[in-house]
Image (cartoon, rainbow, N blue to C red; front, side):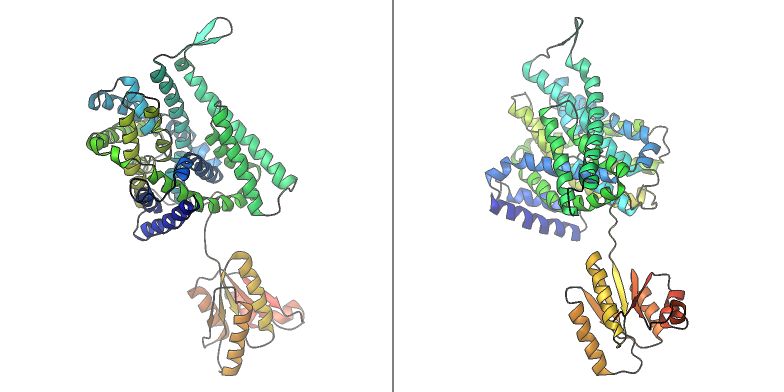
Length: 540
């Protein structure tokens, strides 16, 4: 099993990066590597690992839904609230019905078996959609109208609906009948009649439990200070989110995935600094979880069952997507402020299938339902076709179909490299400047440019300074540059040319602040620089 973990991590990572360098989403490389490592080909993944695939997928989906919740924007959701709500029900419903009707013609299914297939195929994949939408938010595409937020929320709600209907149909087709439920007062309702109540209850309880979990997390991590660092914060938050998901499996009265996503969302409202800290922690967890999720996804795809249904299966997917789902998208955005380009973006952005299909695609076959092998094959086909295509198309068409707005760094992780410029001479003050810039670089994982302006070259002094730089910055990536020219002008030119984050330099003397700065190099840099300047005084 350890060898399987090694194969999954190493090969999955490098194949993902190879796909990225070729211009494709990393998940494409990971899925392909999973197929290569699977028992159908090289057989390098142990049976124990494959048996644990469902649990590992659950863990990975919990992580990505927490990331989604920590990235939701309440104001944008309020702005597009009705669109998000409609996206949660209409596209999934119309796609499932369209697939059911098509399956009755193509595979001669009865309506309920066709609808069971529609529920499997119509579910959206949080593992593909969430990273794509968070990536769009970090780049600013569609954020002005809250389009990524609406898609994120709608995909979570649609999975609640389809999984409930799937369970109901599974019971009906397996037993041949659905027993009515007796209520006090002599009333009786069938599970179908109770379905709207179940959907509302799953959503409401999921949101309530997510809010309570967020409050509990703030009490534990902020008010009671049970943890000492960000790693421990992330560990506790992930454990609580996983508890919600596991509890929903045992007590199917609420959506555990929705509860995990709600917990992240409410954390932003309850304690924004904690949410920001956890966002970085879950970003790190997702790096590992993503590899396991998509490699194991590829390893569980049954290639041998695809051959006989390839053409009719593609026809089913096309009808469901281009007829059913597009009708749902039209109804969902009717009356909204979305233009036709933004509505068209739903085609790549809201169509990928992966995790839900991998989790439930084999259940009808395992329970002996007629047509179960066809349902499994089309579920596998939907993953192979829509997951990589949707992930690629989302990023490829976003710049063409969406407008770019201002990125909100309080809702998403904005990765911007930190580059510090240390301006030094050969005096004793250089040690203080280099020590300070080294401390700042270690705190922010930054790189450093050390600039020494040379007007009267003294090779011995320059060599001594370079040795000092090497000693004090030995664990930091740095460049040592010795341009010539006017000191202030060269410092500013180097700072602007390299787009540095801040300038660190020394100030001389023990005089009052005003007297020291007037006429000095540091004063000139401060007056002309639009980049933050940090002054260091030699305290020795």
